[in-house]
Amino acid sequence: NLDTSRLVSEKTTSKYQQEFREIGMMLGDNLDEDEWKNLYKKLVYWELELEKSKESGMEEILIMQKNEANAQFGKFVERNYIDWLEHPENAPTLSHNLFKKHVIPELKDPKAPVFFVVIDNLRYDQWRILRPLITSDYWVDEEELFYSILPTTTQYSRNAIFAGMMPAEIERRFPDKWINDEEEGGRNMHEEFFLEEQLKRNGLDIKFSYNKVLNVSYGNKVLREVPSMFNNELNVIVYNFVDMLSHARTDTQVVKELAGDEAAYRSVVRSWFEHSTLLNILKEIAARGGKLIITTDHGSIRVKEASKVVGDKEVNTNLRYKQGKSLNYQAKDVFAVTNPADAHLPKVNVSQTYVFAKDDTFFAYPNNYNHYVKYYKDTFQHGGISLEEMLIPIVKLSAR
Image (cartoon, rainbow, N blue to C red):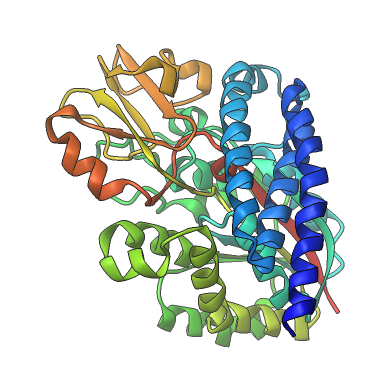
């Protein structure tokens, strides 16, 4: 009834107003890695609560807070990121040590076969709305956020997860397996090889399977194979749907209208998941008592403001990070790494720079500027620095 929903919505609003002041005060502090995770969890919690209560006035305020948080977070990452790589003992969990910290302990003390499911480009807020669909079959043992490495793209972050090392190291140790941005060819073709190497390095000589699901028919094949996967100690399943959706968001008018804002985007992700083979796969794993670990490689952010960048013709096409020689960019909008080795990134040529977009900016070339701006504003992109791209979920579950 209307009165009840009005009361609920008023209650949500007044609770958020209290929290609003707290969040504001937190943003005034000098937050550390863990405090940033807690702050982002709070923002997502309120975003989902206010969305349920249909309280549009407060949503505006929350968006302002999120923008302010991202502005501060960008500065925080800029101050600390290189340090984390130089002094891993003081660093939060990053992509390249995620597997060692969270999966290997499960494999060394196995209670059941482990299923490691990587949903490409799954943001924390999207995980929160998928969670209720999964918890009918699973208990959540642990839910954490970790930091994606930069650039926040599949090529860098997912290879780092499977290899257990930073991109520059991967390139150094396996030069034939790392494909630089401007080279043709698949950039994530060697994850299974990297994974095997990482298991060996950690003294694990175990049976494992690796499947990458790019379409429905392959998803069905994996579903049929779940029973036999219980003969392996580890089963890795990479799922690409959300990433495809975020890229389609730029390509097609239909998706643009369907996923017009954050809430609509979440609802598309949720309805895909409800009808996907992935949900059936997870149910099948639960029915047989498997141990499940769900994670992702990076998130994405809805971009608003264009920032001009100029480079030579070799510059990569990503809108949230650029790498190349003699790049010209607007310094205030980016975190620039002029020596790629500092960020443990491959160096393609001598004067190479990487620049990462902060806030909700995206890069545009001056010569086609207006077309770019119109085409890409309000699309979901990743590769740069934001809470949504970098702070991503790792969740451990056991079958009910």
